[in-house]
Image 1: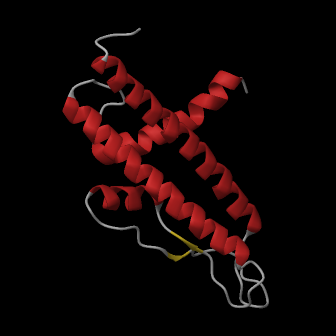
Image 2 (image 1 turned 60 degrees about the horizontal axis):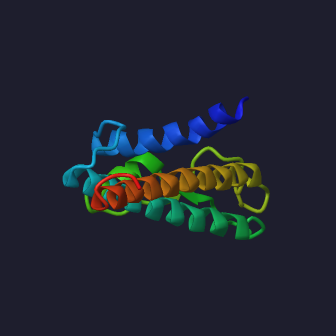
Length: 144
């Protein structure tokens, strides 16, 4: 896999999440409404990533706790809910193998989610940086 392709995958996931939830075209316009909408969406997206990071960390911390059930939320549904003023609804993850002590934390799954969160956060923060740079350039009346 080439580096450019590897960088495109998380970018496309992030853009898909944001654009699908907001029904925006995946392009940046410098008119106030779209910039405000995009930055607000990115802020909520990054907040959701942070919430999931805490949830995954809690799952990992409880990997040896008897009876503990893995918690998570549907990322896209939760993002849509946040954009509409709601909050993510966490729930027990169904379909995971349960150990003899009743615990069902799958460390491989949690590690994958940590890596996914890291990619999503990096892409979202780069998009936010780019958007703010566009605003800065517009204020300066063009590139330096």
